[in-house]
Image 1: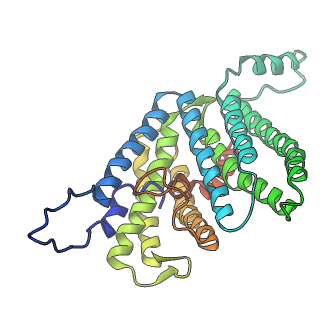
Image 2: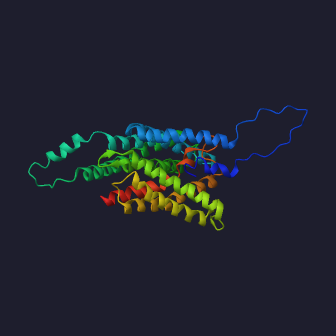
Image 3: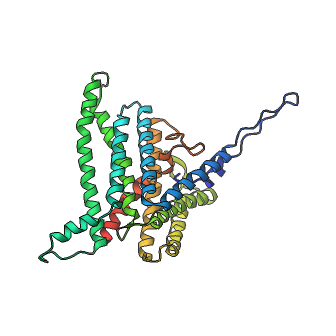
Length: 334
């Protein structure tokens, strides 16, 4: 589902034909579903690509907003399913996680480097490669900050549940779901900061490459599945997905992984193909996971922020499983 702005609209875009009496003037036609999808798809793509390209701070602000909306949609779906997560507390915590990750990744690192070198005046510690040093330092510091924020949020959530007891009869279930939203949405989305780092600098091309890989997996699976699909992948969760579509998406994603070498000539071919393979496997799993979540609580779309496209959780669900795997591989490769 993620970012399938145009091709996914073609499947069900033709409105039914309704006979019109010759004595009654026809009402002005409302914009078709296809037209709405195209308009909002173009707007969404322009905002996404423009914010990523312009600067690390527009990138950070855009994805902080995206992450907050995704988290709010998650809590809304949980409420539709009869649960009672603390949406405001969770969303504010998610914003804090997101903005902290951006600040740690892209704030000037001169002071940190000077502090490190100041402890190495006797030469007893070997001088590391700066790019590797900052990447590992960022990952370590952000992991610690995430843990601290989560530990700090728990007492707040307990206090909020004490305030509403006994009206809310399952306080620890509510606390668990609130924290679960942070683990499912906020922390994975914040790992995009790590993907965007290259030699201790923000590189929008890395984010573009990830977007192209996810879109190619989605579009390839849709196109091949519509044409050749016969064997259902997960019929009880997503009846439209087929094994043939997944295989086609996998192959097309590998081709795009090779092609992005023209945009990222310094990235080895093996790294690009591994990243493409990760996307081809985990992007559909992220889509299926969100579909299962929606079915479990009885909702069709996570939200309605983009008419014709549903919510942002519907658009970015693939990121939630792809990003942790890619971030781990990037750290292991250093």
